[in-house]
Amino acid sequence: MAFVNRDLFTFAASKVLKLERKVKVAAVSYLNTKPLLFGFRDHPVMDMIDLSVDYPAKIAQQLVDGDVDVALVPVAIIPKLKEYHIISDYCIGAEGPVASVCMFSEVPLNAIKRIYLDYQSRTSVALLKVLVKEYWKLDVTFIEAEGRFQDLIKGTDAGVVIGDRALEQRKVSPFIYDLAEHWNRFTSLPFVFAAWIANKALPAEFIKQFNDANSIGVHNIPAVVAENPYETYDLTTYYTRDISYPLTPAKRQGMQKFLSYLQQEQ
Ligand SMILES: C=C(O[C@@H]1C=C(C(=O)O)C=C[C@H]1O)C(=O)O
Image 1: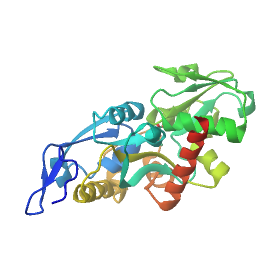
Image 2 (image 1 turned 180 degrees about the vertical axis):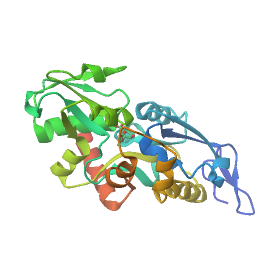
Image 3 (image 1 turned 90 degrees about the vertical axis):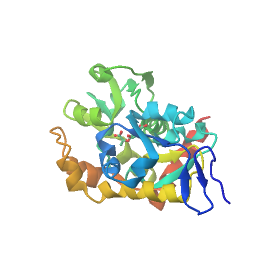
Image 4 (image 1 turned 60 degrees about the horizontal axis):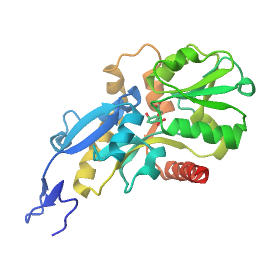
């Protein structure tokens, strides 16, 4: 009899998966995650999980601390996990510009002196540092931002903002540097911001159900858009042109390249 994480699941003699407790799952609370969560509501996997949502840096900490079993975490925290398993065929990625992860400023790149870093992010702030050092080669100071820091993006102070707040900031700042677009120009590879990662091995049957739930919204974008009215940015464009959900081999390659830059930094 095969056991996978006995505190979570056992396989009874009948080979039917038996859940010892619910799998704790944490997802990103932004609009970018709505297509992935759309299919969960009426899906059998809902009986197997406890689902919570929060901003990326928070759920990253929850997965590292073992407070949850699976989370849609920033890939930059992978090196902090003792054990990790990418359990899904879906991610928050981009093949070109992503629209919602940008450095905003009032001045062009070469005039920027300081950059505020979004406290809700782990991947994008790490990506920004890679681009500043390896691609743009800028001499700037980084500031860990907190609260509503977008109002501090003024003069020669730029700021990296992610998620829905970035979609809003697009209407405010004259200069917008899309980090996924610049990564793509730098490496010719797509980028993965967040992936569904487990901190323990989970049974194949659970992963299959979990993937199925993820895929429903991705294949029904008009229905996802219809139930999320949003004036600031066109969500059909966001979900079909900007964000790219399938975790393809090229995206895995982009992710490995990004992680190798993070390793060099240490
Ligand atoms: C594309 C995005 O990707 C996100 C960026 C993350 C990060 O910077 O750590 C984490 C999760 C994703 O939500 C976004 O938030 O807009």
